[in-house]
Length: 212
Length: 212
Image (cartoon, rainbow over all chains, first blue to last red; front, side, top):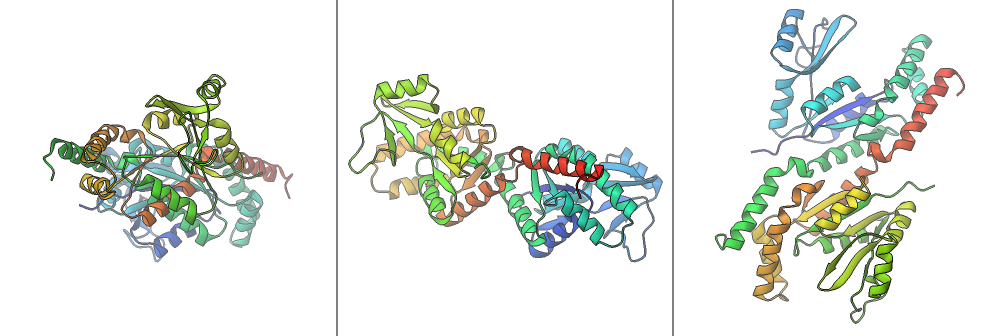
C-alpha cells in the first residue's frame, strides 16, 4: 500500500503569487495533486468540468452539503464554492500530496477535520512589493488594487493560525521550499504511527528471541 | 541581527547511528553548532574541556543546577551529565541551529522549556538491522548487545512524543533529510512573529497612505 499523502492548505494575499508557486511545484516535482473545487457558478469559455472546477447545480451542491461530501464550503457573490471530500481523500489514499488553495476560514475548517493537514501562508517579501505586483498585472483598476490591499490587511490578522509562513521572493525558490517542507511532513511522528508500531513489535520479537 | 537559530533535540536507539548522522550534518552543511554537555566524570585520554565535554567538579555541577544554568541534567552511573543553558542560548542568538543529543526524559524537559524546539527521533530501518549494526561494531559483548536491544524496546515506547521520526537508511540521505527538516522549521509561523508583525504594519501603512 502506498504511504498516505500529505494534505497541504495554501493561502495567501491576492497578488502573493500562490497560484504561480503551486503551478511551479506541480510542474517541477512528482507526486502532487491539486484539489479541484466544486462550484455553482457557470463555466467560463474554455473551462472544463473536473479540471478547473466540478460544475454543479445549486440543488446538487446543497445535496453535497447535506451528505457531508464537502470538506469545507463558502458562498461568494451568491455562488457556492467547496472542496469535495472524495476527490481529496482518494488522492491522499493513493499517496499523492494534495494541495488545496483556500482562504483562512476554509483552512481552519480543514485543520479541524484533518489535524495533520499542513497550513501554509504565502506572502510577498514586503507590502510595497505586493502593491507593485497588483499594479504590475495591469488588469486591475486602482479601485480593485486598493480593495485587495485592504483585504490583505484583514487576512494578515489570521496569519498566526498557519503552521508555516513562506516568503515568495522568487517563484522557483518558493516552490522548492514548499516542496521540501511538504516532504518533511512525511517524517512527522503523527503520520508514522504504523512505522513506530512495527518497530516496537520487531524489538519485542527480537528480545523474545522469536525474530531471528 | 541574525535570525534566531532552531534548537533540535536528536534522540535514538544506541546503534541507530545518530552520532554519525549529526557529524555528517555538521560537516556537510553550514550554520550548525553541536551542544557540548557538562559532566562530572573524569576526562578520558584525548578529551578536551569544552570540546567533548565541559568537565566540572560535583560542586561546580551542583552550583550550575542551583543557578538554573542547565537546560536539563541527569545522573548516570553516579556521574552528572547536563546541557549548559548559556552555550545553547548564545549559539541560538548568533543564528546557529543547535543540535542536542540527549535521551527522551531530557528531550521532554527541553520541549517544555523551549516549545519551538524540534524533537527528532532517529531509528534504523528495522530492528534486525539495529541488531546487525550493534553486532557489527565488533566492540560489544553479546551481553551488551542484548542489553542495548532491551533498552531500545523501552525507548521505543517514547517515540510518539517526538515531532519527527527519521529512518537512518544511509548516513548521507538521513543527514540531508535532517538538514531539510531543520531548515523548514525556519518557516514556522511561531518563529516568524516579527515578520508577521512587520507585514501587518506595512499593510496598515499602505492602506493609510503613509507608506509610499
